[in-house]
Structure formats: structure tokens, C-alpha cells
Image (cartoon, rainbow over the protein chains, first blue to last red):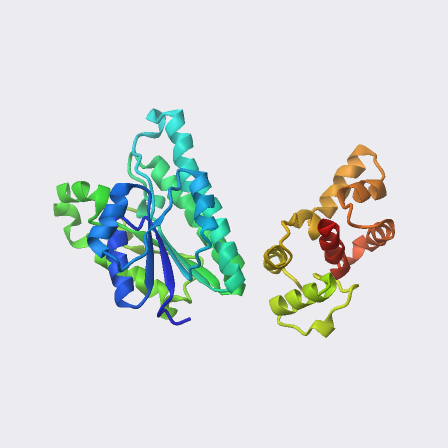
Length: 239
Length: 121
């Protein structure tokens, strides 16, 4: 499947990485549909990308938003999933409400979203899904219990989709970035530049990796994960 | 187009086989080697072509063996239980299924046709 004129939905499309990815997709003649869940997100997309992309509203915290999304009957050949809500805290200190809400948004509703998206892809018998996970799925820091476990759970969903649907030309790939200079991690990384300096990933590095795995050249990678961290976590200090 | 003809067309596209390779008594899994992903594709295609929301458990007899296991625990007649669970199948087909269980998955093309026609009513 050549990638030109294909349509790519980007969950979390208003994030810094999402915007970087949209720019790269456009350069490669792939039509980008970044999702947003707030007016500020939509404004970020418009300011950075103007009319060159097609923003779509999707709020994974609301199941009705997922159903509304599919009522629009949009079709995509590619999905890049970058979305994730922020909640850090020691497991024993988190509120019951936050735990339930976190898994509802990041695991339950996302799985329902993937169910309908892949059913639609099955009709066309083509689809490539890239999930941007995190090294926290394997090596969570303190405070990342929900984040890491939700990432790991969704990795399993993507892997299973790849196994179940490969026969129908629908495949999946998981990228686990290490320390990426973007969003919520930026301040943490800047405080630790003496340790992390050479290993830090820029948003464009991740965007390039995603593009590679979307393209035909990367399609033999299916239902598996790869770590993008310049070798940082391969050191025995971390394993 | 009638149900059987449309269904044959759908299955031939899913499995990339000729429509003449199928008849009403063709076993979808035993004869055509349909896998669960093929049945999902069939379900989506039925939904799209016939505008019907299907229950895959009933349409493809997916839970048949669980139904029979549960019923034997409760001491109810298997025949009566299957007739109530699969109202699209008639008595003679239920009897046929009960005699055929040792041969493997019993789902035949005619079962799916019967399910679609039942929903259409």
C-alpha cells in the first residue's frame, strides 16, 4: 500500500508531537486528521497547521463522543495514537474516582474506539495502526502506576488486533519512546540533562519513526513493540 | 437478490472462492475453513448489505457447546433449549445438529440464511 493520498487519523493530534507529525505527513502527501478535545487544542492545530489538515473532535473521556465520531462515517487507512491523559501519583495515594476515570478514558473508551475503527478498516481490508506507548509501560517510575499500566494494557490490545487482523491486511505497531522533549516531560528532562542529555528524543525523531512504520517499508513489523530511546534503557542500570 | 445468493456472494469475496463451491449444506468452518476473523468480516458485511444488526453468537452458533453444557447441568432437554435459544432454526435442523456434534463445528450456510430471513421478518 503506497502512502500517497492516504488518510491518517492522529489521536492526540493537538499535542506537540501530533503537530510535528501532521507536518511530516503533509510533506509525504498523507492527509492528516488530527483530533482535538478542547477549543485550546483546536486553536493549537489551526495556528500551527492552518487549513492544511482536517481537525476532528474526539474526547475519549466521553463515550458519546466516540459514537458521534463514528456517525461522521469518516474513513482512514492509518491511525497514529498519541493520546493520553495526565495523572501521576503514588498508587496508594490516588483517589478511587481518579483510578476509575483514568482507566475509563485511557483503556475502556479507547478499546471501544479501536473496536469500531478496525471494523471500518475491515470493510476496506486495509489499515495500519501505530500506538505511541512509553518506556514507562515496562519501566514505570514512581507515580506512574496508572500511566504505565494503562499503556501496557493498550499495547496488548494493539498487539492482539495485529495478530487477529493481519490476514485482512490490517496491522499494528507499538513505539515506546524514552525521554522525549515534549509536553509534560519537558521540565523533568531539563532538570536531568546531565544524565539524559545524549539520550533525549526530539518530537521530530518520533515523527520520523512513526512515518517509517506507517510506510510500506515498515509494514513487516506487526503486533510488536520497539523502543525509541537511543539505547538508554538497554543499559543494565535500568533492566 | 435473495438471501442465499447475496450471502454466497459475500462469502466468496471474503474467502476468494467461487460461489459454485458452496451450497446450503456447506459447513462454513469444516468445509470452507472460515476463521473467526472471516466470521467477523461476514458479520460486518451482513450488517452493511442487509442493514441488520446481528448477534454473532446466535447467527454463527458460537456458543452452541456452552449452551449444551449449561443445559445438561440444569436437566432440561437439549432439543427444547436449543429451539428456544436459536428460534431461527427449525426442529429438524436442531435434531440434525445434535447428531452432528462429534464431527466438529456444525455451522452451515443454511443456518446463516435462516438467521437473516428470521431477522428480516
